[in-house]
Amino acid sequence: MDKNKKLYKSANDKVLSGVLGGIAEYLGIDSTIVRLIFALVAIFTAVIPCVVFYIICAVIMPDPPFTVEQ
Image (cartoon, rainbow, N blue to C red; front, side):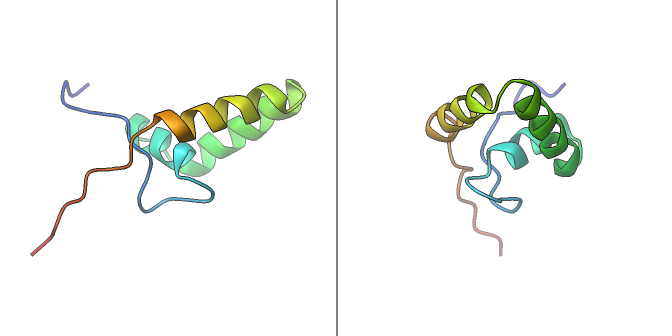
């Protein structure tokens, strides 16, 4: 893994706040897979733990750094 790789919310792959899209970008996999796994875990854990996890991540994870492309 790249040592300079950091976890950010996704700027391009958002549904709510970009948390799952950011995790998918960090892991280098398709965001649909991350969302499906998240949905399955939510179903099997009675939803509340996943909602709490998502809210905590949405608050803690930084937005991606702003870059200007020329």
